[in-house]
Length: 136
Image 1 (cartoon, one colour):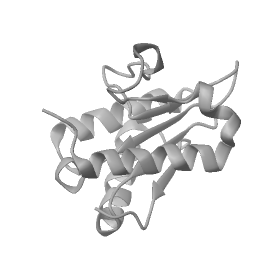
Image 2: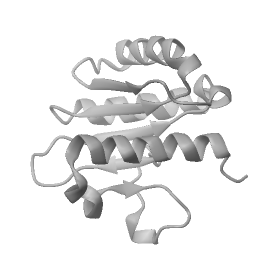
Image 3: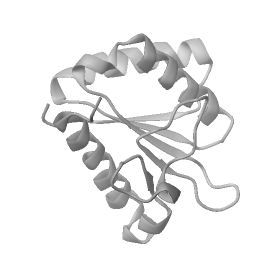
Image 4: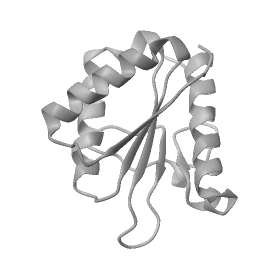
């Protein structure tokens, strides 16, 4: 099954956030799950799942994982397991962040879900960033 247009736009918003937040000099270290990129640029598997965007450069540097979720995908069993895996992994890396891009009308749903998953995984130290005002 191919990637939806909505998912691609959300992933692109994640990439833009990473560059805006960390500066353009991170581009060589930014790993994006995109079939048009070279295989070496794909993010690593975390708990058996490939995140949409990954940044973890330098020893001891906090990891930042980005995930795009469409409204249809946000509450699926697969997404819950994936996000729990990411949160559990990030909890082992102090200062880490999980950045989630969702359409504007699912922001509150995403916040609620992620808080619930943080409770289940005891990953309260992971900073959550939810990109808002994105079209869907």
